[in-house]
Image 1 (cartoon, one colour):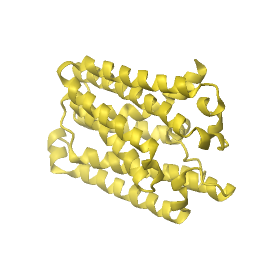
Image 2 (cartoon, rainbow, N blue to C red):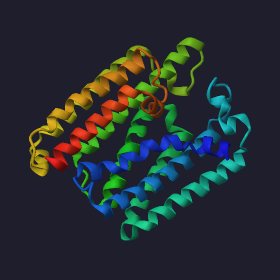
Image 3 (cartoon, rainbow, N blue to C red):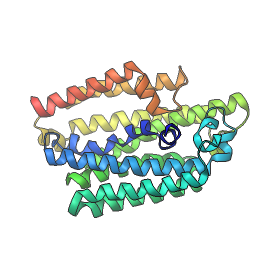
Length: 292
């Protein structure tokens, strides 16, 4: 069971909280039916993502065995056979669709998004991750699919601002993660991924700066847009931009100074400063749109 949990990586399910964004930004956080629908979608996406982790570990088994950290993964270490990994992969994806069916009439839309996400990631693990820039764009698009699923499940219209911010933020995090690969390549002389040779620190640092800057600008434009101020009946959402700026700067510090951006989920779960910034942003945003 311990090895199965390592294989399906429940800690990575934090990424699937993006399905709650449409409900949060759409102002329906207090709607019980939307909360239930979002939770169902979260579980469905988590199972689908775990299915992809099983497939990824089978495809990368040889490369993982040469990696100083990934060599301890269940499939690479031999703790779980490839046959069992494939069975888990199929079972988890079937379970994700079964959970999505609980959404009644909306399950076809959510199930369609889940299936597209699953097929896209199968293609990513099989070949597309070998191409620099394309790899990080696919990862970022996967998060866009999460919010689209969350919007479909709650029947909340996902704004173009939310799509842009999600894509840009996750692209920023993906480039920061690739920075860790470049550092390892520079230290060992061996590329952790086939596409790592198409990245270097100069390019990665500039990409992080560009995507981080555009993410901040996009968020500020979102908070002051007429659509948002009229929908939430407040002109003060721009104040939350302070937390977004501090959060981006902190993550850049983790990536560039601490050189620990290899796992965004781990960074967020372990860094108290970053956690406080996220909580402060969330509480301020909640106060402005739900209380004041």
